[in-house]
Image 1 (spheres, one colour):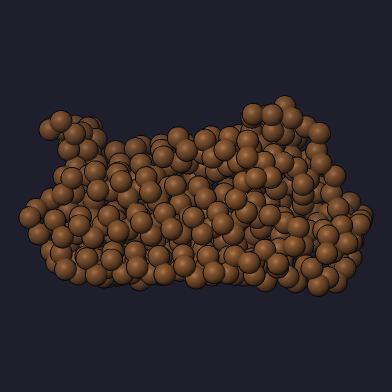
Image 2 (cartoon, helix red, strand yellow; image 1 turned 45 degrees about the vertical axis):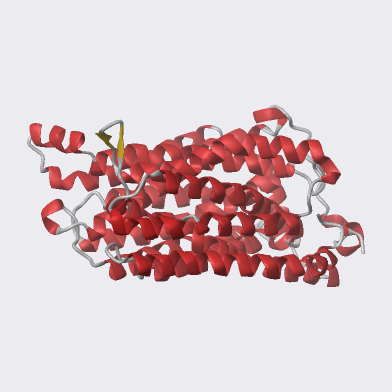
Length: 469
């Protein structure tokens, strides 16, 4: 059954003619690009040092938690960051509207980062809670607004999400370099000591820098908010937000085609949980692996271990334009979304196979950082096949009146995957190579089995998706 028949005619949204932004995309994409860039700077800057701060002994300014406790807290925090996307999408759809939700979310996020400037466990937990709440308001709604810039069949849509995803990763590259330097580097600690500050408090300078990043994002969003009016109206029309007269628009019942597309989202949802469980290891077990078991020197000069977390987003910046061009040139001949998802699972599974020999070599001492360089590259190839495509797919498959809620559901997959990542990271033991082999080998085997299952489901997914590719 065609899309026009499955969805009520009055809910079909026309394409936007605007092409004055990045790469011929709507101007609003530029605004959302830079807003998300700085929001992600704040998130990944804090995440780059969070576990390291928790496991560092008190004499080094840390909290002295053991690995299992720190990994569990990390998993709960990253889960909460995405879990709040579901109520955040609902609040925006029904009451606030997308623009106000993004603005309020950014303010709360900034407050959370600045709370962590103060040195105590109480402030740490309060800061994480504020960041989670704020991200729940901002994250699903800024993504929904990107979708609102395009009509359903606009061929620029996947490319627009890839560019948006590149903005995310520019922020993610800068974040560990800045926040990691402030938190970990001997040079900055010496600078603090020379100015009469406690060098053990360098962690909190890193947390403060993350807050500054969110403030910069808010400045961009507020100054260029006029570009987003039309996109917000499309999202509100789909979601049933109250109009100018204060009355919410009536939502019609879901059609059979709507339910089929929701079922397809749910299947993708399950596999996305596994993807993010592996992906989020970089902030937890792989972060600890880099700090304790990797030779973090270049030409004899040491560098903060958290800098290695910049590799993944750097690869995305390099590959995102290539994938955008590739999908654009292939047009209707490009792989369908289920095939792209399968490729994503395959590549991240192959990435973790590299960690088996790397873990075995730790028995002989610290290993080369090239093992993580290779892992992150393969992981990003998989990410580019799955994550931006997934964001675009939800905006195409979700019933128009539920797009904000379904985007929140989509981020729920990342939430559950993050908690699973924290659980798995609790098995990290720096001085036991055989345990590390079981940890990373088990992740690799699980991902490759899931790849085979997803490949077998491709025909079923195509039927559920109907005309959507």
